[in-house]
Length: 138
Image (cartoon, rainbow, N blue to C red):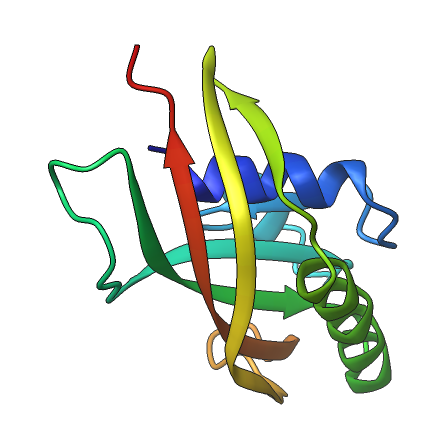
């Protein structure tokens, strides 16, 4: 079940200032090589989770969220916008690679912490979410 892909689809459809700059796992190399920080959102699997499991059609998954922008104010503003979108997310279904992923909730387990990304020194905000999701097994 591609929880990250479903979150990307959901956040892209919501109103955030990052537009289409919503990614999974890592920022694209050509995006990073510009050396100019741009409003962007990155979802990564963070491990953890406890409900369901490998043989279930549902489960909770820890997701790490990284927000980048050109300034510390920009990164904090974008974090607050994305936080609002995820915290208020209703139950919904996203199609990822032809499969339906049902998103039930996103619970912020670590509020955003702002700083600078160590390699490029881009403004960065990091938070952690617990997301309950399921998929159709038929």
